[in-house]
Image (cartoon, rainbow, N blue to C red; front, side, top):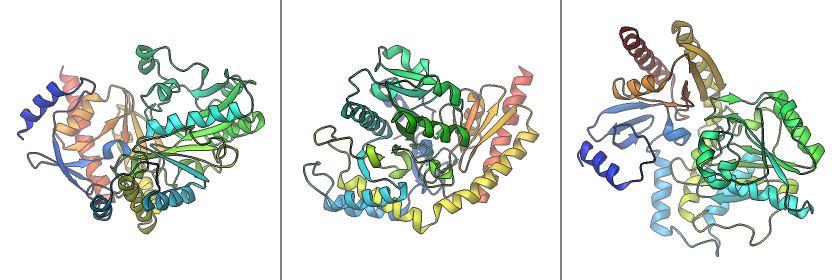
Length: 404
């Protein structure tokens, strides 16, 4: 289909929800995307941190094809082998006891919130328990996930949301302490805030929140949907802090493009739910779990976490150099292959120029931060190429601003 015809038909057929770029991607290979005209793009967005093993990963593709030829779906009224294998490997990697597969990260958050509420109910806390979430967080777009997302812009059109949610300042332990009371049943937070601007939790903060939850017999829920699956340089970011949550959520890179997520629990949280408390039609079906099963194998076989540590250090070094050369870059933070550059100006024009002129895919995290979440299989050559393209995009944008 001709590019503009595809765009026009999409604009007619779809809800006007997304502000899409005028590009129609047709295929991918490794860290490269190709549009319908055959133009090649270097991708440092990975489908919003999804394509951890890159595009067209042959082992994952084969696992999906093999399973599709056998059995795609039966419902959770029956057992299937791929889901058992994937659950065992995921629980082992996450040091958890119980797994529930979902279709997305948002659904994983919904399940985690239900675990917290069920735990409180089992303790006889009544129905007016509270959950502490973080300002500037992002957990998803469904009503439950939106209720714990600390951004008024996302929430206001859909009020009233779930009651009993109180918001603390991320990395401010005193603000969390001030909200704890006898009604508090859980704290939910991203180990590394993504949409909020790439802010890793400090060790003091995360350990302090863990201690508060222990003191008040509340559950700690860590959202690892974006920062998990090796992206931080640990299989899950919390493992780098020596702090273990009661419940965690994962999705994105778990399926390498196949829609699958999960919430996991251990200890007192693992026994909170009982038969009939939760369910899903598609979640954990043989097709998606065959993909997740192979992804988990490949993370170990290809030593992805070790590779991310090496590439993350190199990306940090090159972004620091760019920051020193570009006056409009005012901040740099992150870890592993989830890093962000903060600018003194809106980054939209830079991201747009990078895509349309330099053929570089980047995404933002807020209005003034460019987020770097490439496929985890990138090389130093890919980083060098990205830096060159980004620097040229910055140069062109700042030049046009100066001439205006």
